[in-house]
Length: 98
Image (cartoon, rainbow, N blue to C red):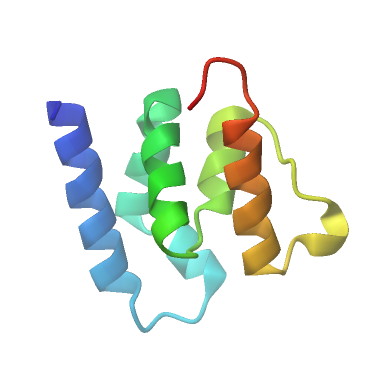
C-alpha cells in the first residue's frame, strides 16, 4: 500500500468519525480531512469509488471537484442511491478502468 493510500485511509477515518452525527452537508464536505482528500486529486478517484461501493456517503462533491464532471442528472442530485449508482457506473465505463 502506498503512503498516499495510507494517508487517504487516515483522512477517510478522521472525516467519518468527525462527521458521524453531522446533518449539514456543507459541514460534511467542508471538513478539513474531506478537503484534503480532494487535494489528492485523480489518484484518489478509485479509492473513493471503492468507498462508494461499500457504503453510500457524501463522495459526490469530491468526485465532481476532482474530475470536473458530474454524470448525475440534476433532477437526481438529492438521491444518494442514484448518485452512488451513477458515479460507480461512470467509473466502470471509463476506458482502462476495471
